[in-house]
Length: 144
Image 1: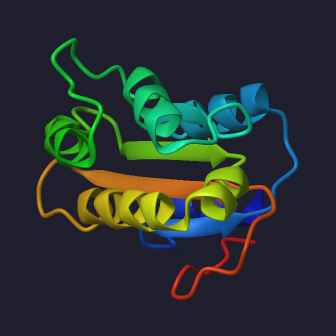
Image 2 (image 1 turned 180 degrees about the horizontal axis):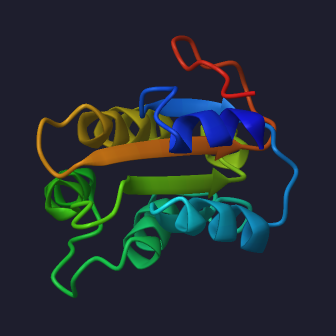
Image 3 (image 1 turned 30 degrees about the vertical axis):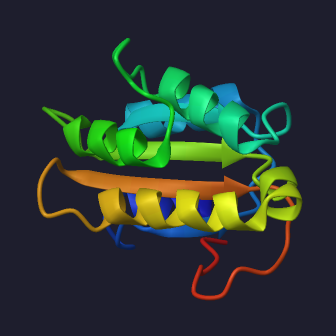
């Protein structure tokens, strides 16, 4: 987990990264939480449409009931996600490739909205790990 370890130890800036770590989600969660970060997992293998993504990300991040399941509501709710007493948040998006292939526009907007939270000046650190195979994404570095 060296790339992830570097992120958790603040040797890499929070961002959106491609990550090929083939570790069980329970091990990733344990590692992230042991380092003092909060963890959420988004299972993209079973949520391949825009609507399914929006629902799943809301569940993964425990958004309130009034979350409208659209990209504006996603941005609003992400702005309310704070690190609190933790080091920050790691969102593991397992299986992002199906949405990227099926609905490139929705995937691009999702990355843009998530990137807005990553780069926010308030709320603490927020990182997104895109795990699994998918098309090349310009400007998204690898954490490996």
